[in-house]
Length: 202
Image (cartoon, helix red, strand yellow):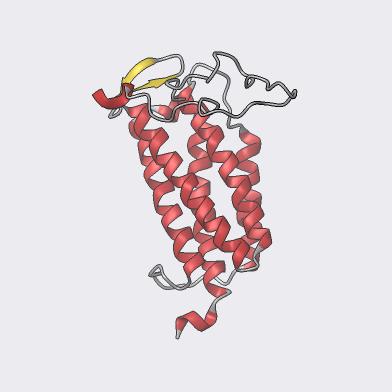
């Protein structure tokens, strides 16, 4: 999506060493900072330079942030021994990157399809069956994992609002549905995580 970086040798493969392997030099890794974004613009594939305040960039930033928090929750789930949840969170990270594809390349075929929404619906029902959902208002913080999932849920909600504000609801309805279902699923996962940590409730 950045389109600002360059390759070290102007080609895909590193320059070989005399021993036949890849020769490691300081230029093997492409630069992270190109300084082209210092003017408040960035490159989006197929759209040229855009302001970082433009709708597509805002949406992509929100979704990227959501994926980062999903990753943090995934690490915590693995540490807590919740391998099933950790595996699901990895699947959800892959799904949100496909949502980013719909935003970054709106003229392409949809990356998010009806099957993705069905997967989220099925996952939601499965985890609802495993979870005692509270009847009262929930204050996040019943457990560390639950709190991380609640943060991810809040960021996903923001991404959903950004999708609507950016006009993507009509062009990519399945992506919008998927993001909406994702926030519901994260709520259930957070409550499940809280239930795994009864001692943290005092």
